[in-house]
Image 1 (tube, rainbow, N blue to C red):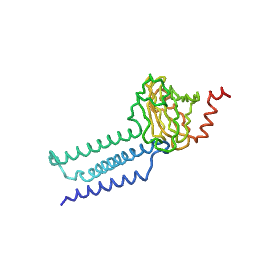
Image 2: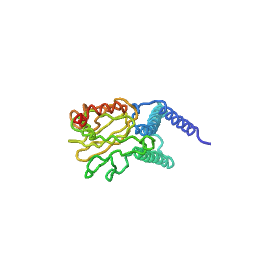
Image 3: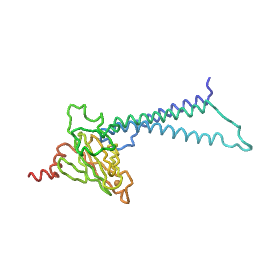
Length: 275
Ligand SMILES: [Cu+2]
């Protein structure tokens, strides 16, 4: 027969685990889901949030319980009993965190892989490649298996070249010879963005896309994503890059194909020449 404290511990732990799983499924702390990467990322966030909440509530409750339960009683003098070791307990508190950390590590790797982060970029010889073959892509999020590849309707890739500088983002559309301070993308189309900085390290971050990628001087990086929801979302520089870093923001406009085409026509320097 288990001692009563062990039974209480098991009941409270199980209650805590199910309570946190319930909470993570019923409360949403994250912004709108606007890209194909977002649901994958949110899966990881939920798992980490559940683990974090269990640890936080469990530990805080234990500390408060101990403060009350083991408080010095009036008239109690001298030290407590000299307890030296407890091998089963030590094995348990080493094994449990080891398993949790290993699981989180492997799971994070799997999520990053599913988002396209583990793809090789250097020998990428696809036709969408707009940068010179000399240039080596150093890192970033490649085309994920989750992107609209299996869809019957395959959309052409939108190529954008991002150049980041103190303190602005500039988007270049090589196809229409457009340079814009705002990123326009058609909903449902895969976007391939090659990014380079002209000065210091910046980071392109769109919370609604759940994507962030460093933009590095002299080392091009890439970011592949498929916007899934129309709207205007903030682009934020997420790397402290100088005194006006806080003001380094832009907007991504995800719009229907027709609206995007309209914007593209209006801004394309090539079509102006033709007209
Ligand atoms: Cu910046």
